[in-house]
Amino acid sequence: MTRIYFSAAIAAVLVCLLVGCGNQEASVAAATLKPGKERHVAPDFALKDANGKVVHLADYRGKVVLLDFWATWCGPCRIEIPWFMDLERKDKDRGFAVLGVSMDDEGWEVVKPFLTDLGVNYRVVMGSDSTAQAYGGVDSLPTTFLIDRDGKIAAVHIGLANRRDFEDGVEQLLQADAPAANGRAALPAVSVGAK
Amino acid sequence: MRRLLTVALLCLPFLWAQSSGYLTVGRAPQVAGKRNAAVEAKIPVSVQPGFHVNSNTPSDEYLIPLKLTWTSTGALEGGAVAYPKPSLEKYEFAAKPLSVFTGDFSLGVTFKVAANAPAGPGAATGKLRYQACNDRACFPPKTVEVTVPYQIQ
Image (cartoon, rainbow over the protein chains, first blue to last red):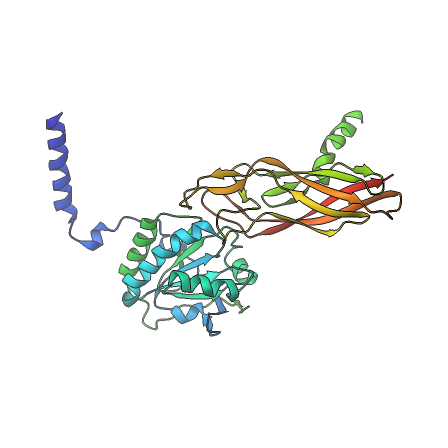
């Protein structure tokens, strides 16, 4: 039995040497990202943030975006939000941003205290039915989209996902090529408005 | 023809049921009583397998409770609701067990027939608000119509 463990340890060391354990790029697991050709442009929107400023998704072109549809009454959303705060803290200087879309019917009256209590460090906008429809009729919360630098949807997580899936997905997208020279991709014809 | 009629009769309860996503409210049996008498109704509710709704007394203040409110009670007065005992269930997304309703249960309602109620049929109508989740996701709060038919004797 001891020999089996010893052999396994040797094999593990060899694998590490071959793929480079210390290399961050190689350590990123293959997150379930769609191949580039299968990605569709994320619908643009114009939604207000907590300060009343209108935010367009197009403003984030050139960045990797984690777009999270959530609500204060959603338990699984409350699990994921601290993960997203960590990602924002860790990767915001690498061309990454988290954007929360609240689906609370009660609006900022309930959302602002929640954001303050949790110390949410990323921008949150107030969602609308039309936004949810534009994203395929978001009904399950949380629903989270990973959007690449070209503004295309690379992955969708419906319901509570694994933290590692988000971390790996974001890392892969950040490591992908920089955006096109003009920095802009085609915007969809329809843009959904602020509530 | 007889077979068709049988199928139609079997389907009747489902036709009466008010469904809204993950919760269905069945047709409450008609209640009957004389003026000033207390009458009790039982409203059948069913939650889809694999889902739960928060109880009327959720474990956390951020959770939306199940709540029945009356929009019109007609010739009936009161309408106090007796909710069943909730169960405490542990889900991956919550640190502590949550107070929820699952499966089939009934809401008990107590009315008093008004002193000046006219004899004959009527219906009390209300709205049941709930918010459902499964073990990985939650769904926006919804409202279902509730009807309690009555007969004043």
